[in-house]
Image (cartoon, rainbow, N blue to C red):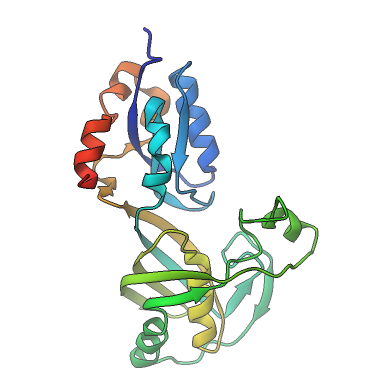
Length: 239
């Protein structure tokens, strides 16, 4: 079957423990000869919506990457790590006070609307051509430029101290790891991101996403049926 002319977007529900590049490599193996890329990197621990672009779809990857995102996550108070998530080395342990709902609401409210966010050292942002995470592995900390970001909406879904479950709708380039860290600092006890799931990117949701198991096991012709055509993508974006 010649599948080299595939053009469009495949909505993928990324599994934990794999990089976004791993997902691309698996899709590329299923559709040999087709150009494949992805929009909006997800950390290995994170799960959820990853937009995989195929063929001429790769030409609109910048447009799709620039879309607003929505996440559901969980943070653990009292423990900060060098990566700001559960994969990092513990930097500090602090006692978690008996926080009131009002205090937690106030901390989240500080990071709503427009504000600046300092990217973490463990990130793919480059300094003089070198990704920050590579410098971090060498024990180096370099000056970073704060990023202007926006939180459109947030919801505290559950409080089980020291854990807090939340939902956040945010602009592109937003680090949810840093969001958890900053809220922990606002609460005076520190925090790190325990888990994260992307639920939405622009108008695209998990509702039509294909799982990694399906990508690995389904016949390529069946996977092809799940690919959104470029006209469909254009209509969904409201273009």
